[in-house]
Image 1 (cartoon, one colour):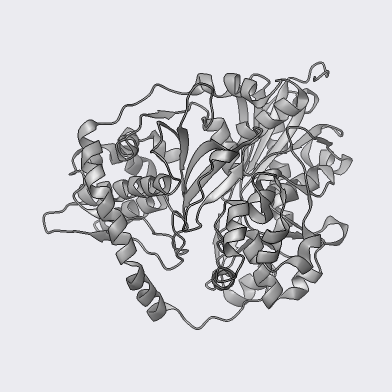
Image 2 (cartoon, rainbow, N blue to C red):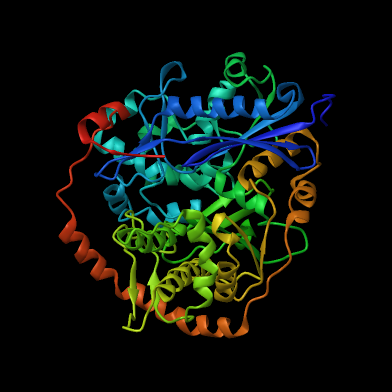
Length: 546
């Protein structure tokens, strides 16, 4: 049990792709303050997406400093710090715990060809049955295999391969480690939460196994904040630090993926990407024939989250709204982002349900759930001359719902009995109604504002003994914040039930079209060397993204 008088706060760090946040909670889960710093990364035309590891740590430290200006006596009151962050990607660390190269992010597509090669190997199914996870270019295993084939000198300069949160944990504590969730879905077995020899062999990484760090469970093991990290963050040396699980499951945990007394509940995160998850006992995990999706350990003994992930969710809505605003701008009219969002529900109400089909594969990286195809592209089907902008917008949002249903269908069994929603887009009641009718399930949204940081802080609370186990913590941190159930519209349920098979048939039929289009537009590709961000900017004129 925790026995530190006056230490009545927990800090959750959530290092996302676009922003790093530090959030202060009291021990009962009430959110007190948030500080954030934009996260910076760079993209290139060859599919590269990378960022400075040193800058990521500096930005993380800055968020903690900013939080200290918002919470009185933050350092003295902090019982523990917990960290989570963006998943997949490759963060290589060399001598003296310094970066060996810029970090490859989950957005990086350079390993796509390596994935195709590995997926023809004899151990493909064995790897999937151990990890429960389909192989994609975003996976660290695929990225390291690609580096081994193209730039092995980078790997020779590395001593350990980490993920984003692992790198931040190293800077906070001086400990090289990873957590059971990313370790098992990348290189291991979700049942044992350990590394698996067959998986490493299937990836062709036997020679690089020494890069894999120790696995620690943050609900059981904490490490003290170093003096150097204390100086950088404004916190006290020796403050316990918890290594959280990957941000996907931390967000789902904080948003209600698993609560007592509700069987079959699921959670969808509707943000830039779409994450669709259900909590299951390990014995009940469904491994589909296609070999897609993720199985990611939850910080609950014997339980995992079964996951299918759409590469793009609200990015599709942004696209169609920006299209309309570009046209308005030609006539001297502007519409702010806030105004656009406010109009969504009205536009949807004036549109015809199920008028058109839209496949929401707007990402340049294609799709990864419930199928993996880097060539997949978005498109409308069934347009007629009487269609208007609200019909197009509704088709886009219905496309997100169809994609979500497609993902849940790939997990086996029935649709969710209840769908818990989080992410900025779920503020739209009309969008929630589409998701509810598409799955036939009542939906609930959580009042929890920063679910990812909360999930990490919950792990720290259990490790400190504030709660005897995660179930007890969920009972106080999560369940009371779930809103009232919103029931699906029966007529919409029937409309979408008839339309969904057409959606699936069309996306399968379009695969050769996507392939032919990709062949016509792709330039000859050559392996790109790993370079520093500064050199890449100078040599390739990349587009900086925040």
